[in-house]
Image 1 (cartoon, helix red, strand yellow):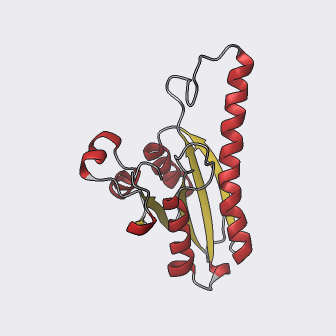
Image 2: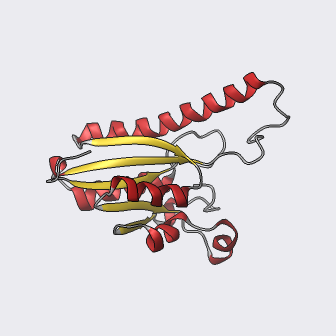
Length: 176
């Protein structure tokens, strides 16, 4: 953890949901860039950014699959693939922080992002939580729900939700 004279910012980050694109989501990248530009500015040593990536367990075990797993080794392979994707995501953000000279930490948890992020806020007690927003419309919010709205209501610290610009959004906001 950072020293008491640094401001600790927890950022919930996720990967793009576009198939075949294991990179940070548009919302996560924009939230990071906004945080560096508007909060950290040039005071790199005055902040520590804590990156949290929450992997959502596949409920049926058949995520992105055309057929059922054939053996226990297939399950191990899928878990390994998920871990690698999560590490690849965090590597992007940690690398960016090192380019700027901003101290950072990063970790992966598994579960419901809303619950895990709020639980991690209680555990690590950051000064601020920053999350990106996909810009779901009212109809989509009813069925998908939003992590950012939940965190604003339930996190035990101030929360900043960063919206992406309209021209940076894919046609379907779910494809972040």
